[in-house]
Length: 128
Image 1: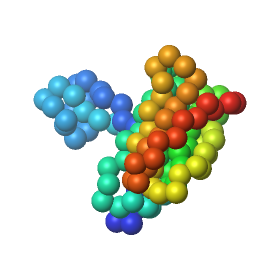
Image 2: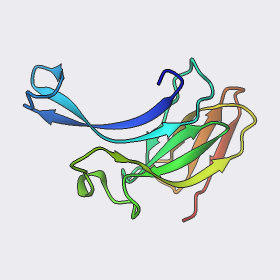
Image 3: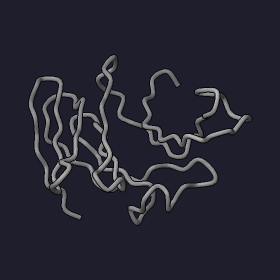
């Protein structure tokens, strides 16, 4: 397990005493997860949510991948699972020559950016 990296989504729950506590009034519940590429160890990779909250853009090796909570790209509140569920990969995009460390969706346009360890920034206009 030490050689694996994961993207995990947690739900904050108020007053759930059977779970480990984050604060006196709040606990965490793992709702979704997916295994990540095991490259760029020692660096924190910065992922982001799309402005509407339906997609996650995750650094993935030498590119990025778009993840969703379900196959129809539903909102998390509409597809919150009872049991822990695997995130769905919607698309993968590879354009860097070094490990991608950060991703960011535009708040106003259908566009996202990624940045890699060598300092290069790539812009994408994903089409579905």
